[in-house]
Length: 331
Image (cartoon, rainbow, N blue to C red; front, side, top):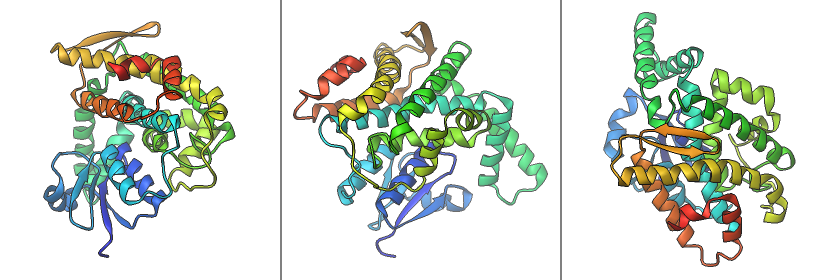
């Protein structure tokens, strides 16, 4: 048991299941601990921030935030690597960030926008927090959770202006991802990459909720297979090269990552620098309006750091330029 890691999280947290999938892929000995009242004392011992997942190492060190967790563990468990070579390594990191930050908008919106999803999600969370509660106590807890979470959808940018954009964007992404996964088991070929874990965490949660789950199951069988495959991912074969990936991956990079996410992230950064309470930005043919997200400025800085660390950008920069991502990374 001396080499056992502890992973404290929740089934309804995309970042928790993302890290759990990574642990499973690497065959890292660990125990999955549900974050609830029973585990709160241990959680507070190691957590510096009120977020999950929390990883406690065999040396009793706490690590938080899914991306830094994977980055640190990859140094300890380098094989099988989750990083393709060359330009693809950064593209995988870019998709990981896109999943964490933009994919979370789809997930959070669908989870709390409609009554059927609100009730289903609040009910699951309530049972997680108080599994032995009476029916009356459970019902009261469901309503409390539902009210609190519905009031927080503004945080990810879901509002009357953006709701239709979020749902249209998800439908477009679902179609492009279905095409891309038609000829490969994972985003970058025959084994999961860094980007798979970040994007998959959001899609897994979307699949578990009524409205988004029905869209996935009804429209995207290849995506559904990928979602299920990533619960216990395996290295079945090699990563593909850019020539094989480009026809179906570039549309995702261009239409979703560049045109939507990277345009938004620059506007979010400017709004924070100018101290704005709200900002608007044109994404494609639509105007997006929301309050700035402070955390994302830090995430963007880390992504820029990873771009700066690429020693040879000759193959990477033309791809990023075509996708509409280069300017934001060089700012």
